[in-house]
Each structure stands twice: as C-alpha cells, then as structure tokens.
Image 1 (cartoon, helix red, strand yellow):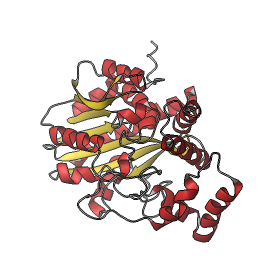
Image 2 (cartoon, one colour):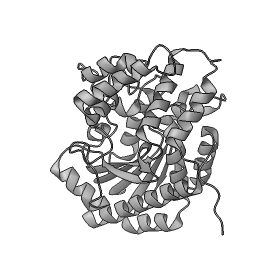
Image 3 (cartoon, helix red, strand yellow):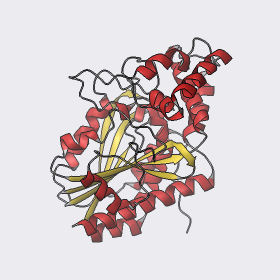
Length: 360
C-alpha cells in the first residue's frame, strides 16, 4: 500500500499534513501573533505520544530556521505515520514529542529568520548581559549585504581576501557564528527573546519538566553533502552529555568545537533552554543537518534574501526570485533526497529510543 506524500509545497499544506498525521495524539497549538504569506494562521504545533509522566522523552522538532521546515516537516509527518516506530517507543517507555514549525512565520514566507528578523538558533543568550561580540562579522557586514545586487567583483574580492588572510573556517565562523549588532544582517541573534523562543520554553516546561532522560533531534537543512544527514552534537560541552549522545546515536556524531562538523561553533543555540527549563533531566541532543547545495550557493541565497528584505518593499520585483532560491537552497525536491531524509531521520529516532531505553 502506498503512503501519502509527507512533504509539502507550502507552510499551510505542511501544517495540514502534520495535524492529520498527528490525529489521535495529544495535540496542542500555540498561535503565532502574525499571519502568513497568504494570510493563513500560523502556529507552533505540538503532538505528544506517550504518558505525560514518562521517564524518558524524545523531542523531534522542525522549522527552527523557517524555510528549513520543508525538510523537517516532511520527516516528522513520515515518523508520525510509522507504526513500527510508535510501537518501539511504546515498548521502550519513551514518550515522543513532535514540535512542528518552531518558526512558522519564516516557514510561510520562505525565510530563515523569525518575524522579528532573528535567527532563532542564535537567540538563546542571556539578554541581561552584553551580547557576544563578532568583530569578523562587523568587518564583513558591508560586503555581505552590499548596496547593490548582485555584488560586484570588488565586493567578492574583499570576502575572498578575508578568507585568504584568516582561513576558510574563520570566514565561516565570522559569518555564521551569530552577531548582535546588525539587525538587517544574516545570522542576527536579536536584542530580546523572540516569540518562538518564549513559546518553545513554554512547551519544554509543559512537556519536559518531569522526565529523567531527555533526547532531542532538531531537523535542519542547508549544510554538507547533498542528502547526507550530519549528526551535530547539540548540548553543553561536557563529558556526560557527549557520552550520552554517543551511547544514544553512535560514534558518527560531529562536534563544532573540534572541527569535525560542517557547522561553526555558534552563539545562542536553542538547546540552552533545556538547562533552564528541564534541569532535572539527563540530556543529550543532535541537530540532524541535511545537505542540499554547495555552501557558496546557500550563502548567496541567504544574502540575497536579506538584501531584498532590507528594502522593505512588499511589491519588490526580486521577491519571487529570492523565495525560489531560498527554497532550493534548503530543500531538494527529488524523490531520492526526500527518501534519504526520511530514512536517516527514522534511523536517528530508532537509535535514540533504543539508546535511551538501555540507558536506564
């Protein structure tokens, strides 16, 4: 028997598929204050399978970076319809929590940022203190988002010169680690907690404040080899968390602090909220990052998107082109790529369930 296509072409379709797949679960919705690109309602939707007081909880989340929700939502819908996975979790005593569209506004508008213009995965810092500095980004800011598009040859030479002087890894870190001084720029972490941050914290308090073991698979796309899901360690740099992560997901985990990951070490990751909201839990998490296009193409799409947004023109002639480029940069609409996403997400979930059960 064939299964319905789990992936969608719009946020509204993705949400409808998620809600349909989650029928019969404990389902709740947290409405986003703004409307979507077609004036559709937006929400962070949460589906729970398993007892409210389960000893172990596995979170599978999507859409932290808006447009990346096309990838993550499809994987979530496929997992929700996987009866074998549900049965494995039930036997293991592991509750499942699916958080759909952490950033629904960005998902709807094919953008990576929230409605506040913020990269959600750089937003979890203590705003009572001075934010982290990023002098590399400060230097590169005018070249990343030039006055005119496309960037001229001299502009690109400046970017390449920084990479030549400091190394490719330093260039990537300067651009993507997170910055807090350029609100219109890429990878901006914000000046206050976003709606998505506050809502996610609420979900964690509601669903993860009783469990003893907490695992988290946060689904992303846009970095790495096409169709390959990199398991990036997403927890504090502590021996205990690393040991749990390897026990639950195997030794293929990569780390941002030792150069083994395609990602730079970042400021303000979402997983920081776990330590605030779920201090009772032994925690380990991964970002499951699926490659799409070469890094240069993904960055160019992101720069173009921010350049267009900076113009604040709802009738901008560039809007259609940038939305198309962003979609392609973070979602590869081929049967092979989509099947690879489902297969590898399921493998990560089944490993986590088995690992958490054995950890007891």
